[in-house]
Length: 275
Image 1: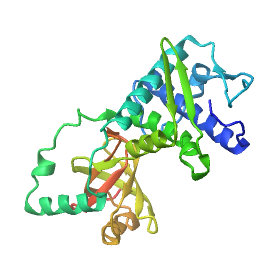
Image 2: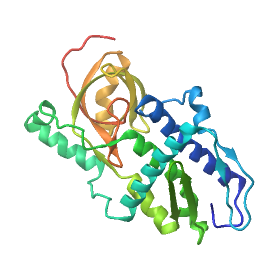
Image 3: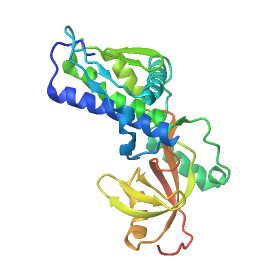
């Protein structure tokens, strides 16, 4: 429900598309027991998140979405639990202070120059949220952009999720901004050793696409400076495997160890063979 009697077709379309993506992400996790970045929705899951759009109700813009699938109730419960927890984090003191990613990389490089304890004795990743929690909350956060816009005025957005339980969340501009800050919080995980094929490079955006030969998944590798990117170019041009140190990018305390984004630290020169 949007408390504004007028809503543009573009805004409505984006809202419904992002809401569908929220449920699609949850459906993948429900069926496959986990969610990885860029995982495609299997068409056989469609029926579990197929909602029928009812006639808008009068007053504010109120739209009812219904489904007859029994599995959908469990998926709705998962989405409701994630959004409620994210909402509570955002409205409380859940946002942690973190140095800029660039500063964190410089600190890690300085420590690695002294010794390899950081990568020889890595810490466990058990304290992080599941990546699915970030994906669900992040896609929902896109919907709240209509509330955060300067032109939104006193517009509010309310969503009621009813699976086996009923959860209602209401956002005004201030709450939408707090939610966005919490969800977009980023920091670096423990530096680790990786072996990958560099498949694409983007010198302008300071990033590359790499294929992790250990997990058999693709990841985005980000660089904090041009010098770091230049050190990787020979591996891309000569089609050689690259052993390197990188930090997984943690977003909203969530991590994807298989296909998540990585932030480059340094190359380890050890004469790996060609692909």
